[in-house]
Amino acid sequence: MPDPIPRVAIAVKINGRAQRFAVEPRLLLVDLLREEAGLTGTHVGCDTSYCGACTVLLNGQTVKSCTVLAVHADGGEVLTVEGLAKNGELHPIQQAFVECQGMQCGYCTPGFLLSTYQLLKKNPNPDEAAIRKGLAGNTCRCTGYQGIFRAVEAAARTPGK
Amino acid sequence: MLAELGEEARPLAGGQSLIPLMKLRLAAPAHLVDLNFIPGLSQVERANGTLRIGALARHAEIESSAIARLIPILQDCAAGIADPQIRHRGTIGGSLAEADPSGDWVPVLLTLDTTVHAVGPAGERAIPLAEFVVDAYTTQLGPAELIREIRIAVPPASSGGAYIAFKRCAPVYATATAAAQLTMNGDTCADARIALGCVALTPVRPAQAEAALRGQPLNAKSIAAAVEAARAAADPPADIRGSSEYKKDLVAALVRRAIETAARRARGESVPGGHLYA
Image 1: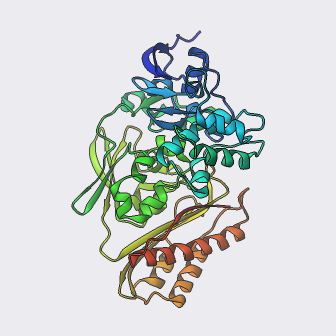
Image 2 (image 1 turned 30 degrees about the vertical axis):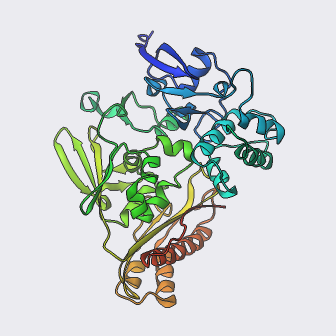
Image 3 (image 1 turned 90 degrees about the vertical axis):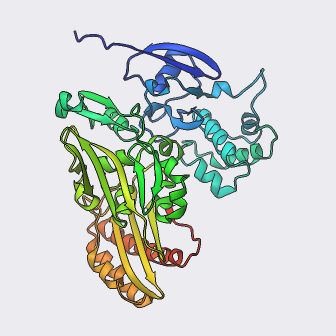
């Protein structure tokens, strides 16, 4: 039997909560979130850095968590879909996705929510071209893009987005 | 450490190609040496007439840098690579070292005076980009050698460039790409550099297309000659993205658009460029 892989101690603040883990250096960030932190809202779609279902924010920037190592989050902050709602209230972006039918099966939705969160932080009033560019790394295999774009436009008009 | 581990080890930069390749079992390195914790390799700065970009500068950092606003072709490239998530992680050094025939940075940087500064057990050396890429996925780098920095000469006044990449959607490989960098002297094209991506195992500089413009008045006739020469220089493989003939027509259209955009930018106009989706 091969030797067990030595574990690396990492400290990551996930959705505002400081946590410590001992991980194999090869562990992916998405597996840290789902398996170690128990946050299963981050979905694995293609697992090859295409679809964006696994999108989270790492130190304020969207990344595909299936293509980032957990050790790269050491000392950093991660925001997942579980961190959007506050005090039992949906985040304005989530509310807009509900109201505009910005989802069909919902599998890709966590990734779209976080890419929208990033887009509106950088550009609070995006036009359609900017929305398309901002969400270019997320795929909806139900092809429900019209509802998603309407939701982003609606979210952009909401205070506190 | 790379020297100790030997050829089965791979350096890991942004990981946006290597990690998916490992998942697909197209790469199976025995060891990964993570470069991300090495400090001082992320600068994007101008020192007199030279731009210095650290190997670990992420595409998004270049996209939002002052030098990208100074040199539009760099902006076209950095702002359009893949998608936002990948631009936040992927690095310019990783892109050059991978030497993927579909990569964005090599054709763009071939139209500028670019040298790759590498460091390894034998010390540091500067390699002109045209010599750096040897073949598809193959560079001059030795197994224990790393890119430290990319240096680019600031183009002369009255220069403009454009990079146009045509792809089906953001996260996939482009079907074909064209980069053009022109230096104008009034209505005459004092210098012209053109590079084509995705049309051969390595990016192509179509020498006759450049010659059709260099020293000539830039007009419909000289541009048409350059476009036809570029089409003739491209030998794109037929694949899922299109037949060879289709891609040659596409190259011609992209080169024309790149030259026309570059010329307008050389005159100081602000014109959009970058990646186009089908």
